[in-house]
Length: 312
Image 1 (cartoon, helix red, strand yellow):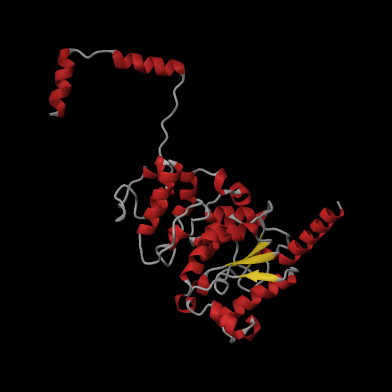
Image 2 (cartoon, one colour):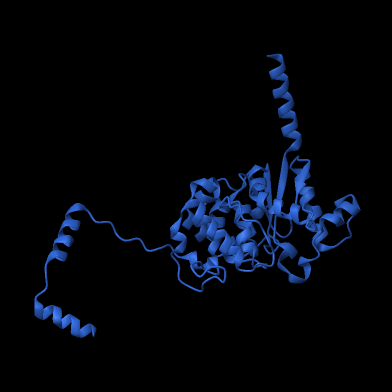
């Protein structure tokens, strides 16, 4: 009994020490010329500390994130820019496939809205890039706890809260700006939402790298596709093919638009799923009987010939 108590005490100490905070942001703060200036895994490793990195806007963004994590009382901070060795394809692929679970298991996720000022109004009007990017969909859905910071690294709206996913102004603004219902933002789980609904959520998201529109959904769909940059729209094809074959979800085939070069039965882009498929209205027993009775009524010969000649 004493041994079990001791194990539980050690487990709690280890869990408390190992808690980590994830970073959610737009690479380069949305500026193409800055995207490649984000601190890399090797840059941080060679510097041995984020505080020894050169004084640049992207390095300062990382330092500010780490400072906020420390202020919150945590020891570990994770950023996709420098915590993945992208020179190793095996590590990169494993990381991309694990990303959803990492955000889901985080103690908190800090969202940096670089293009939002302190006097902007609300998220719906400001059109922040963070609201539209493919990867940030899972970064909004997976974490149980989120804190938003504006471009000056101040809490969004100055709202001091333990969790900006709690009911309130920010949650409502986030739902309006992203098109994701507030209850979905709070309670999302890959197993509890239908395929078409998840595809609809992803349909308006964009990515600077074409394949990321599919790879960013690996966790949301529990997909087993292997990332292979350079495959173009085959990435979306592989994702959708897996959904059809593993989940027997044939509604994926209900779409109109340009076909994929991978398979003409599949679309080349997820944007086609922005509209919900048409659902036929249900009929009660009396309506069904009435309509089937009408179908059994035969036409006169003259009426049938008239229809035939009209068609011809």
